[in-house]
Length: 301
Image 1 (spheres, one colour):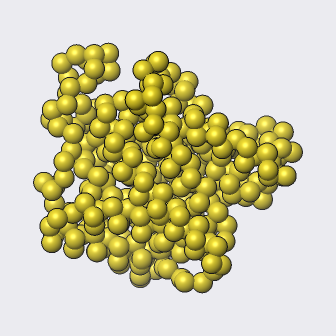
Image 2 (cartoon, one colour; image 1 turned 90 degrees about the vertical axis):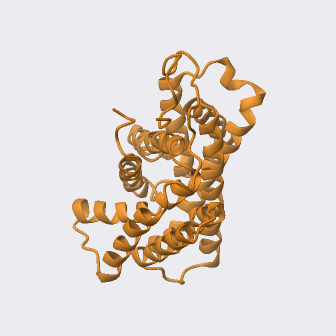
């Protein structure tokens, strides 16, 4: 059933979950620093994944550990940088700046004029939807650009661990070690310890981790295995469109003319992107016990 669901649909489901988690996270900014909320997010995701996956000893060996740790730290750093950015800049500005990362990945991975045009159109759509405003603090812009760079690293490293055939297990290990490494950030936030003594805060933080990290990133692994990294980067442009739809349905936020044009531009860009210019993981055999000894990896055919 998972293989029959189109990759863009899986991606939109993950994006919807991510924005539901973001709504919960905003409610914590009055109690915790953005960095502390991001740490709670990665801790919550790691706990859920550890209980679900319980990666074996092979997942903790040096050969796989380096890539897993790099992915976990890039993901956690991306979350921290983005939360710090939206604490200083309008959300639209931060989102638009952050999209410099995935758009750059798609442009670098492309070799066809059609693909370059699709990336350019997606970038225009993102700018229209986000309603970019170049106001705000310099530190906010720096945080947003840092998030963009780490988002690009997330795509590249995510493809690498997905290609190994054990993407979710390696993601679990990476998230776990990143959570341990970043726990000291909670200690330096003077508001964190009193707030974390409240069960409600812990529960919300856990929910943020599940909705914003665990579920969407697991779906990302599925999509990455079925598509090349360039197509995945273009699909990321669907996130602002998804956010606009969630705002319309859930919050009654009616998009303006520019936002509507941006949604149309993004949809066209995704359709324009060629399907034969990437290198999905094809005909890769998956170890017995995961999908069966004779079954191919998801998306292999």
